[in-house]
Image (cartoon, rainbow, N blue to C red):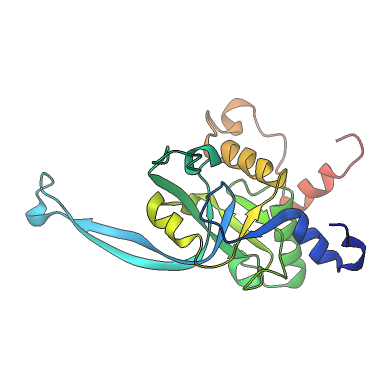
Length: 213
């Protein structure tokens, strides 16, 4: 980023977040621009007999997708076979008013701030990249909509089009968020300690901005 001072601020930010690549290697945090991934809707057993192979009904979901599986499990690293033959991926959605359910500009700003502060635990906010092809808008990933795809198929899609790869330390932050979100355990806080008051989103943000928090 030696020429960073001559670039627009949003481009400098994007280059700090991402690397633009076309290699066939895979890493956690790799973002595929457009993939059509089979999504199982339901299945039916012949004559209701669950001992028989079911008939599977699926649709294709066309979206941007991000790799959730750890880099050490998807990178071949000189091996003939990956450690994980199935890769966990999740769809990416633009952080716009429609997807966030915001009816007013101030409500959209609030919901984006909630994402930025990490207060929506299932979602991770991703910075935009105006130089990406196609341009990558401010977006979020929701791990709860994850899917499994074969490593061999995903790797075959890697060189087809330019994709974004999260840079360090953003990639590590993404991995830490994913681990904390997926592996939450134990009862909810309400079962451990009685609630002191109802804390709404706006109040929560304001409270965390106070000195000494």
